[in-house]
Length: 265
Image 1 (cartoon, rainbow, N blue to C red):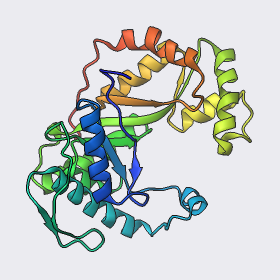
Image 2 (image 1 turned 180 degrees about the horizontal axis):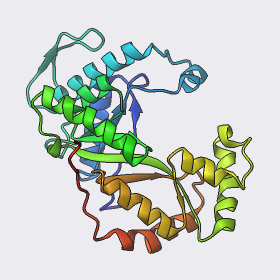
Image 3 (image 1 turned 90 degrees about the horizontal axis):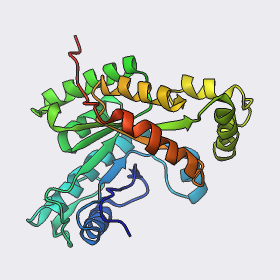
Image 4 (image 1 turned 30 degrees about the horizontal axis):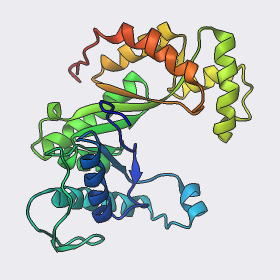
């Protein structure tokens, strides 16, 4: 129904999807959308979600190894030649992935922050996504990431930096508190916090919180640490007023922003 919007999952837990099937599904969606799909993958983290759906939830070491193999398999099946891979979890034997993505190469986003995951990002990804964090913590993660890139001979400048973070926006304190109450319906872990205190609690958890002007300042601070794209997580899907605030009072003030990656030393 759209023609310009780029879209994709942020992210598919590899525990939920066989990468050979996911590579083919992603390629089909990319073809159908005219080359606008971006596949995002990660290790998976929500143990309760796995339990609820009866999906096995391996220990973190196995999930990271599976992510490493999955990224290899996806890249191989998007290529032009039959793929053979002696993987422990996802072996291939002369496999051809059809259809092929319209984008060549199709973008692969990998999310994570641990040293082993960052090595996988450095090896396979076009885009790296991290979750909400402070500029100081982001700088430490970037140092690990750039070190991982150096270990595999990859220039980190060729990989887009992005961040996913929760958003609580309002014209004033009353609007923030009203939206905070709605967030509590979607995020049970925040239900015990008084709505009046929730904006401060979310800000401490590295959400973007505040008036449009305050959100602009927070995004500018992230851009100053190299973040090129910010994915805003809205829990109330019916709150179109919040989307209009971003569109009308946040985005126009960010048109001059250019992400920079300052020296780490």
